[in-house]
Image (cartoon, rainbow, N blue to C red; front, side, top):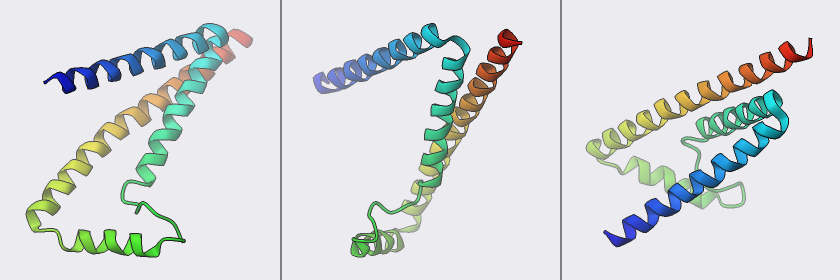
Amino acid sequence: MYGKTIVLAVAALGWLVASLIAFVIVAHSTFVGIGAIGLLVWFVCTRMELEKDAAVGSGWTPELIASQYEARQRMSPEQRAADHEEQTLAMHSMRFFRNLGMALTLIGAAGFLYYRL
């Protein structure tokens, strides 16, 4: 129980720091900052979506990629179903945040153009 409290406190502190950084960016650069944060969120979500099933390794470590493929083949049907459900939930969350990033980018661009024209 004590360890979980520490983890939650660290996570809350991380969100606080990220929020303060975002606030400073937006306060300093107004709508351009909103658009930049939107682009950053959009980029990260798209990158994670593209790499959702990618093996952790590179061309230098083909045995790692092969071992991950073999481990996936050895899964029981229940484990595959649980893995699929977990990936589906992650993809729904990622889609939401990707759309949020797109919206922030559009809001930033529209606000910038509105105040510049």
